[in-house]
Image (cartoon, rainbow, N blue to C red; front, side, top):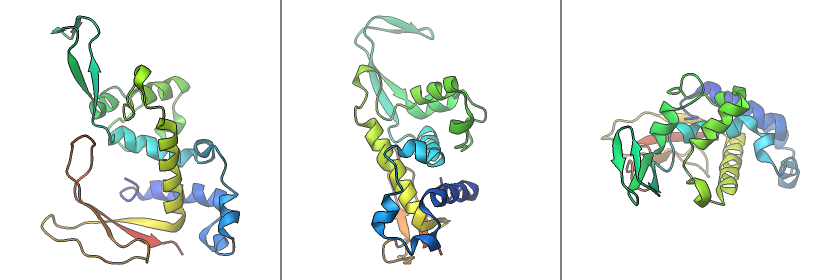
Length: 207
């Protein structure tokens, strides 16, 4: 999603550089000096990067389904659901159809920053990536923290460029740096987790 939306990438670069310094400045800093600039609460320090992660999860949730069990006989939209019935909720349908902010089918990280407190809570409740209720994943905050830190690290070093290839063509290892060659993300659609097929991204070192 970042490679597809240049304005999003530019905003991410601006936020990262404001905290860590621009690429030229970081050349004269040690790794310890760079990491010393990071705070424990990366969500507060990098609100736009956090919004990008949240918006990506909203539009392309890593967990496509969440399983629930009816604890008593229920009627839902005219359908009788007996007690003990397993129900599979579709994460993306919920986040799209019940999004409390405008333009739910557009990738707009700003919605997570410009929304009201009530709207944000509604959007967060629609994120079923880590389950919900009393059995919600206790490690969800750590997982999101790691994702945000990865986005910050990658965007501090690279520009991301989407490559368009015909589905029949084979990936070519065009090296952009010794760390990140052209990276083919060839996935299998939806299973236990959700993925996007045939996405190719080039990592270009920032000057």
